Image (cartoon, rainbow, N blue to C red; front, side):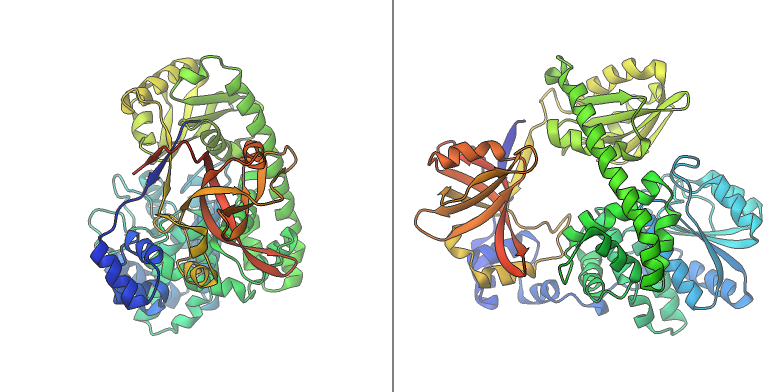
Length: 575
């Protein structure tokens, strides 16, 4: 895979000097702040000390007044409310938050998670029928509904009002009683990056403010909201970062039995969690319920009120996750082999694979793995009845939705956004689609094969990375899109001792390196095993890495998470 190292940008030297003086920090740390849009004492204070008081007024969101009044009307008259959410992490955490909060208010309510295989994504006719059967007169949709005008009209026709809480880009607004979505064009809400769970949270926040209910009762759910923020890859900026900062503290208190049970099943023993832990430990287990079985299973676990109840439910979630990991591994291997057996693939601009034997629940994960392996837009298709259905993932600089739009005549249906999408097509259209999709991507990329750009923030010497530096660096978190864990470049690094390959296939690199005669660091480099020989032979290399906390047998140390390596003699950094 072609790779290019690229510096993120330059900063104004006067601004940098001023920030260094005001905060008494190094030039590297000041540079990191400026690259994140923080250039003075006041903005730095808000960045390092996120406050819940800084959350935006929820009534700035279009239709919030109507939604709150309708919700209060249902509460006062004892109407039955159905809380409806999608089957992924964002949807199931949303349902847990809103359903649990309303229940504690004494509301008459139920919840509904659609079946991934029978109903598909979004608001479903079957869900509306269920609401009608139980006598619900109000449906609150979470993380879905913005593109389901037909289903909303169907509900309205049955005398059911709908409040939509969504965060996806709307086309035509559905005819709901209230549509809460910060991305609608006529919405002046100042922060557009909320998760679906975040929009549901704002509805409850608005209700608390209007009816003078203690917000502390709502803040108990920041742990679940934080899981949605991490799992849904929404921006870790502004309001999301404030919510996640406090949500991680909430998770650390270990008050929610369902979360504690999942951590127990995972063998997780650290006293606190980072967003990385949320994404790689909690989120896959919650997601596995919807991928392998049904998302209702995850909601029931998150609603558990005792450890006894949670520990009775969590083994099924763990089993689903184990099955998901097995399917992920096996199907990824088969898909990679399929790609490598295609002698024309090196000249293609896309990766499209298909098997009638693959599990529909992991095609999105496998598509992401193929992008990692070959760095080309990837589509993984499986047989679904008489049709093919699948997931697509993109590379930076290519709008996947636009690429699929140019092939619309060959597709039964498709939807998504710039980086991820889903699609359905007839079997006989597979080969024409593969050709058309490749031609579309080739044209959109101006016939230039995509190149993976690895951006770094700052060039730094190992000597600067001391305990004070790391203590301040940790306060840059929580990390995520828009506020990624800073990537550093260090030149002239050599093996100190113990460098070796690790893992079942020896694909990964465990290293202990130094810069000249200075400080040495342990590091891990995933899929960088081939660099063991050059390092052991004495070659000097340049590293791109993040600095992370490593805990082993109770000892906490700094560790380099190496993103890429090159020989020091081969400088190909874009500046």
